[in-house]
Image (tube, rainbow, N blue to C red):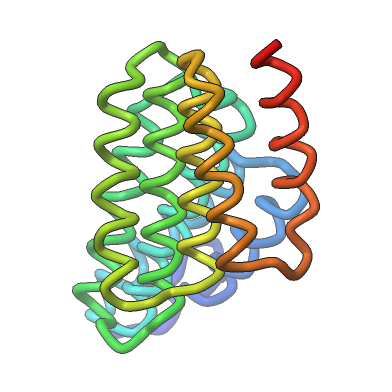
Length: 193
């Protein structure tokens, strides 16, 4: 193999991964996605499993960002793509704990997308499954995040009383730096009036 043939425009897979992270941090999600796809292409050509997993993760994070920021949780397809690529990254590098946590965050994004589109039952089912799974493994801050997300969905559906229960559970699990839940609880009591 010729090293130049295994790069595009002189960039290696890792430099495309770096470009992707920089573009994502700057809010240029479409450019970040293009860079991460180039990373994946080069890694696959080189049969570089380690970089391929990292590139799949970058693609996933970019779809997740596009879904959350650009589409404001409106487009379910971005989250489905993000989940697909993160699952592939986990297959390629199952020891990478970061991938596992990010996959759960992306699935929460999918649930919030369903809720934004009025599919409250589907959103609650997704979150109930995640909470059940993470309760088994006692994952603190992530579990707190999932309870807070379920509180959001319940609030959006008009179930303010039960949203308070979820926000309180979120605080119980992860009381440090969880100021948003206090505000959310106050808002729910206000909505109950």
